Image (cartoon, rainbow, N blue to C red; front, side):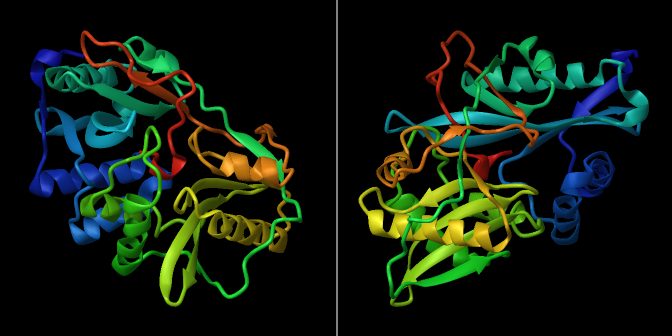
Length: 317
């Protein structure tokens, strides 16, 4: 392909909507999200889209999403890369490579690190990304975890603005600032709802006392297991944490599931709780396909993550 005849733009208006319609076809799993974007015109958080055209024909897309995370008790900038796609008839012509080079230029101009999830790590290693193995562990669904009497529980398949406003108070002010914790502003919570509400797998159980939210747990209801991605309470609120864990295990038993994968930060206090309750965790058994997490350091810098860094799957982009 003669790239001298191609252009890369940041689309807007009808051009942006047409691009989303094409991405709707390329990414079947995310069709509900693209339908919501097309219906409401709501942007995808801070996503900056780079669309490649040959004259008026759309060839492919890559996006970068500036975010902030906590690392070593300091907020740091990071850029997520996502929705890298080539229109099928233009695949294997270097379109994705050309788009990634443009994304890397934009990232390097900011001199900050970047991260992504992929099933094709070799493609991104060529762009300086390093694999960070995500060591998920799992336990059997067991009895012996008790919930405190008097609490009210709600199971959420859909989240409202009011729900996430209440969740933000717990997440921002009480939940510890573990390494990798996303700084969630109002726009990020809108993105969170956008990737939660349309899908059948993600669930949230919230715990209330006297009408006030005390904590919540998020998990995915997979075919043969639950995958817990958030257990969000204050570090010393062990009774609430145990009650939420008991509620998750009760949910699993109700649906006949016998396994729970824990995909949370290495420093999370939940690990101590599991040990105290005599719950043995082992490396996650095979049976579910998980993408590879990769990080690229800022230009001229070392990788800022330690090697056992764990990215929350609740914030998978």
